[in-house]
Image (cartoon, rainbow, N blue to C red; front, side, top):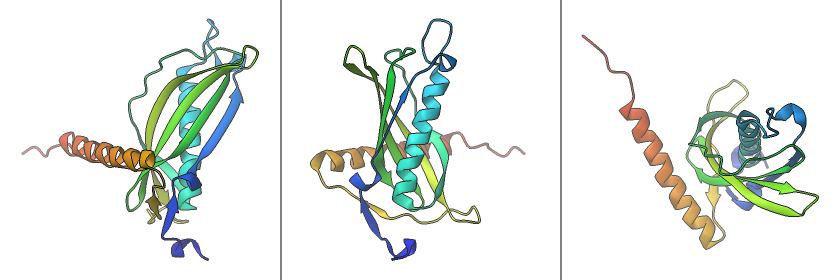
Amino acid sequence: MSKSQISEKTVKASRVTLSQMMMPEMANTHGNVHGGWIMKLVDESGALACIRHAQHRVVTVSIDQMTFKHPIKIGDVIILEAELSYVGRTSMEAEVHVYAENPIKGQKWHTNTAYLVYVALDDDGNPVEVPHLIAETEEQKIRMIHGVERQEYRLKQIDKFQPRETA
């Protein structure tokens, strides 16, 4: 079956989990992992979920607000869980949950959640249609409704801040 014949996929089919130990070169002088390093990993895990869904390369279009609730330290393991929460014609929203784990103490905590939008591209760099998203659980249906609301908000913000022509 070719990619163009795939008309729909489940949320579960996009799910990605990445884990990585945080090392000294990823942190500041206080031992906290740089926010930019965490954002890079969030972007990569969201992109992987979208690539898995679209079966095309993707580019990041937007990253919603990201608030760091708890620090991640050198030696902690960062765990990123990503899956799709919205699909448009060519765009997809990935919901990425970030956790930190102290592997010695066996403690794990949620540090933040981020929503990122990607567009699937063909080999020539043009946007390409992506499969529809199927929710299999009530929780996924609610997440998809919220994904539609976030996308509508994003589009309103784009219209609101478009440059106006001056005479």
